[in-house]
Length: 267
Image (tube, rainbow, N blue to C red; front, side, top):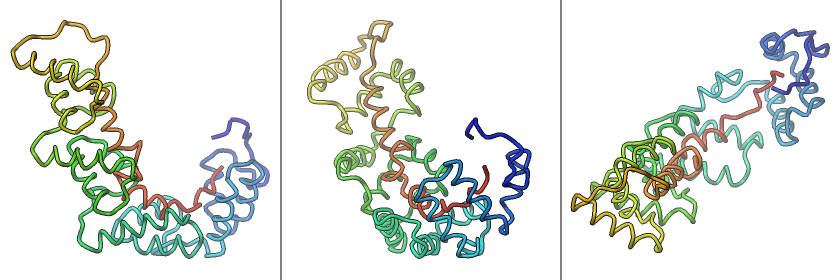
């Protein structure tokens, strides 16, 4: 919240706190005052302002009759309501052409029986698809739905092939945890990195030699100035998680487009 906002705020009924102002702005009869206040304080982009005005014209009621950010986020985070939420967003000009195109691809995939990741909503799916144990599920849906970025399709396909062969990703999540894990599980991390094609050509030979040594029982020195296996794994986890939600976690990304209407009247 911007630090230059001082309470009470005269144009918002002299509300004395964020929660007080939210109560004021949750009342639809105050929507004009709240919208004007956000515009005055540069708290909304021109696109958000335009969408907010359209939403106001719709009677401040969203898909399924939901009212307010919490209600509508919950409603549109349910994949069974996705078509309705996308239609609402499209009708009210709340999605770009690219967002609409990708949303429809996801919807078509679901209608065709392609099972989406077992999660609902942006935050839940970002976390779910960042977990290596869900890598196969999330990547498979992204590829099947046709929303994987061109620059990542080949890498995803190689990773899926490795996973289907039973090559499991290391049991770690996030850069710090994987750095620590791969420093003591080098063979496991190297095998997965090589199998998924994450290792640059210039490092493959050295990594393979290191693997051969490890398999012979030759232990590495008790120090780790750098950790290439962890670096490759972290890159893959980033592809499979929240840093690329649009491609790997299509449900949160598409529902974000469909459910992130301008309910945010609070200051």
